[in-house]
Length: 140
Image 1: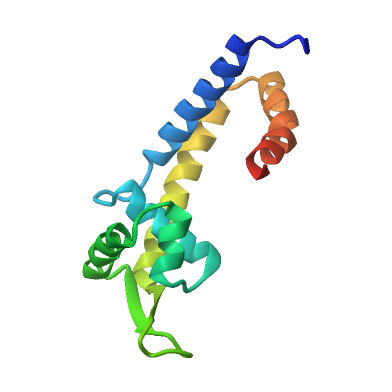
Image 2: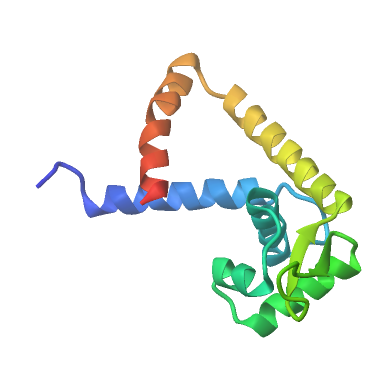
């Protein structure tokens, strides 16, 4: 036995889930989780095919098309014919889409910074020490 109980593993998972949920609440109003996720994928990876976005989000093509239709109507993404095959389209962020991503990041960073300021220096040092471990867990 490694000294950790299943209960402490569950408690850690639940605490991380609550924290992620609270971070995600800080965003531009009117966008669904799926819509925002698509914008972040495009910001990170550049132009993508709808099928690639569907795969990244683990959703069916009709669902990604509904998501893209809403984003396109809002002026946050645009679809353009692919350079190598005019029958296929690639999705790209517009300037307005980039602005939503930047604003969402600012909102989330500000919220998180306020929460971190509530911690003592020792608590903050403890959190700083686990960042590499959390990153390693996230990459697996």
